[in-house]
Length: 145
Image 1 (cartoon, one colour):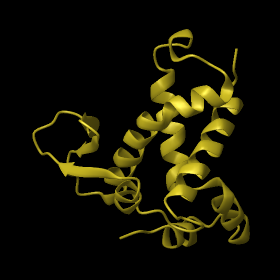
Image 2 (cartoon, helix red, strand yellow):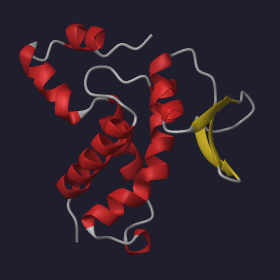
Image 3 (cartoon, one colour):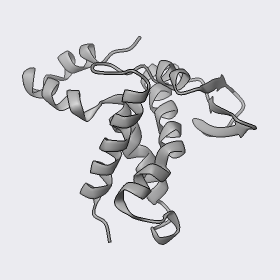
């Protein structure tokens, strides 16, 4: 079967392709801007139970987000839903079928994707090394608000 490293590497590759497609080359990724560049609508819905959900109406894809006072939660929820949408590319990359993996694998892939969309591997780790992994410096560098 597949190890965590393979899934994470696949999520890294797929997220880089998505970011390239949306015109991101480095630095902070604003989840709302990314989502709109990819052709999704974002709808804020105070009534929904979960933080986020993905819906498709005809050809139009929408991400419904429950408002939160912490912007990082909203960014995570949006990117997690993008991860759900593009998870099939990650499964394809590792050569797996979603039904042959455990029930939580798609959710885990969406989490890997959210992490790599918000903190792109091609720049984040280099930035972390350059600032000696200073959390305040990284938070400033990757702030989107």
